[in-house]
Length: 319
Ligand SMILES: [Zn+2]
Image (tube, rainbow, N blue to C red; front, side, top):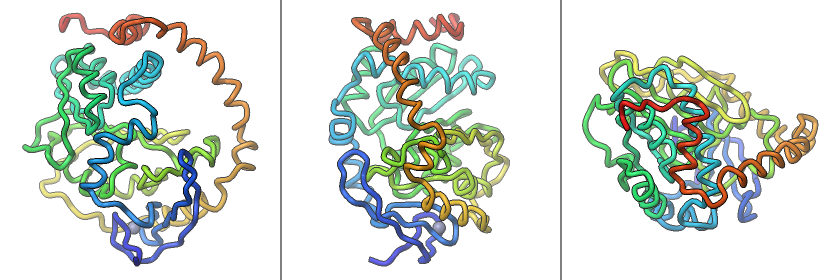
């Protein structure tokens, strides 16, 4: 099958063979020579993917269909650190949508900070878990099933965009449901990171591999990019500017192509070790002990509440 970029439709690519970090299969990765988006060469269709995420994904990749206390702790810690970054924008009853809400930790914590938070996720086990333990507003939905226009002040997508076969269609949908001046908050793995393991980066489940430049290239015509953290992961906040109709991205930045080509060439074990990769194993040990200590035998809700107490972030008008 010939190559067609899932973002810009160009047929020019440089291809690489990588190994899937979880199951070990060889996968073909294509780097688009027009927009710089790195992607799986053969993209599965949307329906097959939805079915995969509904049942198999969490079991195959996470080895379980609902989060353990340790995972609640870990996801809660991530959710709190993301919420701290956008805390100034969360006011009482701010309408927030979390796409890919997983076990519901972020949705719950955002609502405890005062937001009117809603989550969607394809994984039924995780959704039920969140509903039962935190009484949050979550639904099993695909992004394409979201209706209406200008409904939300904040839309968040943490580690979702890299799983989707049509990132531009998703960005267009978010643009539709966001209010003018609303924020789109994205976090994705970072192909630019030199300190993340080359053996833990390529997955069959990841369709796109972003650099800061290729991600900005997809957003810049319809959003103004306000904040980018370019570290182990890319954390980006952009604002829906007052554009009436969604514009197809026009000019791509040639540096996005050269950056992606060079990252695919140099992302290897030597670079990882030279950038302190081995020390990361040691750094993980105290974290693991802390996870056990704060999560062992505790109710999921209590685990999340303890994050709010430590950070003093709860808006108790809501409780
Ligand atoms: Zn492209």
